[in-house]
Length: 326
Image (cartoon, rainbow, N blue to C red):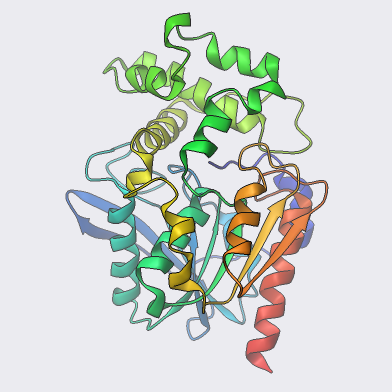
């Protein structure tokens, strides 16, 4: 659940652009090859970035939230998206495959433990990885928290958010027959996996447009048309994960397992007016996680690139850098 409509307004808070010192494709099994890169200081504090979506992919701007003199910044495109191949593939593509891919990266790079930095679905993945491998996690920095619960999916795909954006919601719902509108994830699934590429692109664009239109607090409810291949991949992967409840063992699993990471320090940066991932999820895990700080950003929505969100994240990473170098 993530895109970046406000990049130009946020760049003033970011570090200057940098290029990777290491780029490679990794064979992770089951026919998947994922893109991975490293930037910054090769001997620095390792931090892995978990991008949103599922299916969003990384962007060069994600390198710029960290002081490159301090951090060893690791980015990767999750299975089926970005530069990973096969593109838009949902076969052997589950949360647990992604956790295993992260472990493969850690072992390959000979990193004992690392920070996790993720927003939206990236926050979900970071939390699940940390709960699975707490001994490998030194710190969590989360943004726009999504806990992969039925209640959150019902909010965004069941009409909750649509009450604030009725005209935009109508464009999303009117593409499917009335008798299928009580389960829009299933209705879109049928069309996103129909085998008709033109239909998959049309519904992929509609799925992506609904999300992108609500990403920013500055939104007017409109969003530009995404490139067809990107929209198809993004929508198929999100729908695949959401149709399967994120492949978690039970609804509410992440919140129930917060005790596993109670000792790990963390920071949560949350937009007060996040329409995609409302603040209740961030507040809930903060309440269950005594070693966390919650930063509620006023006048901000969901997107990583919103000025208030970007400023808070950079400030957070700078403070951590200062503490580690004292």
